[in-house]
Image (tube, rainbow, N blue to C red; front, side, top):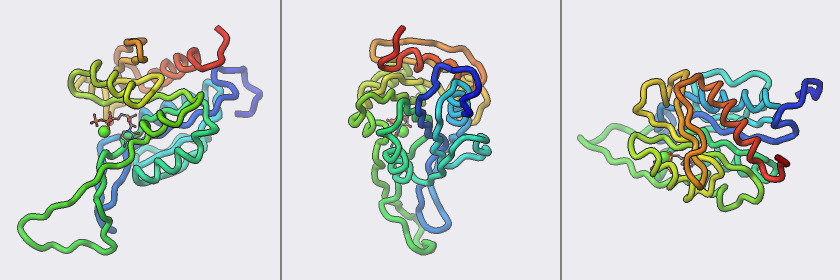
Length: 226
Ligand code: CTP
Ligand code: CA
């Protein structure tokens, strides 16, 4: 931001966005990841900039080019993302966790390529740190926005996540719905706070979803005179 444009609702606010799917190494040539395209997170980073914020994007794997003119830090694993977010958390006003973070990673990363042996092979996985839950425990005045990708009982699961992770808002995605979720250019979301449904958006571009979400967050920031 040059400061010369007109003031947006997020002027002077530091917004951290995580995007993409984490990559969990098995050995030097293999890994576990997921179908996240990174599009929703990138759209949020761009929207935050349009609304005047100072944006820092923490991006795991995506096939999209990172948005131009936005400070972008590339990370690989859930652990890398956790460390990157922690470094900037204290100084941020809004943190948006749009990334698809692996829930489990290989217990060990083999230093050299694992050789083919018997007819079956078992890979031991261990839980990753839940980044959002950890931020929820640490937060002071930071406004936390989580995502919930669900295939069923969307409202119930999303609200349970919001409470467990101490978020201010949670964006629920019904990934079984046409035009929503992984890989698409559009999304259709329900946004909840601790009290219940706040905003229900029909299918629209991820850019538009991002603008609506951040406008809502701006209205709810602590210390804001309304
Ligand atoms: N998340 C996170 N760290 C993890 C796992 C998830 O920060 N290790 C965040 C995601 O970025 C998202 C939110 O938590 O904002 C919800 O992710 P989701 O996968 O929907 O929920 P989980 O708590 O992992 O539960 P489950 O996958 O069993 O539905
Ligand atoms: Ca998960």
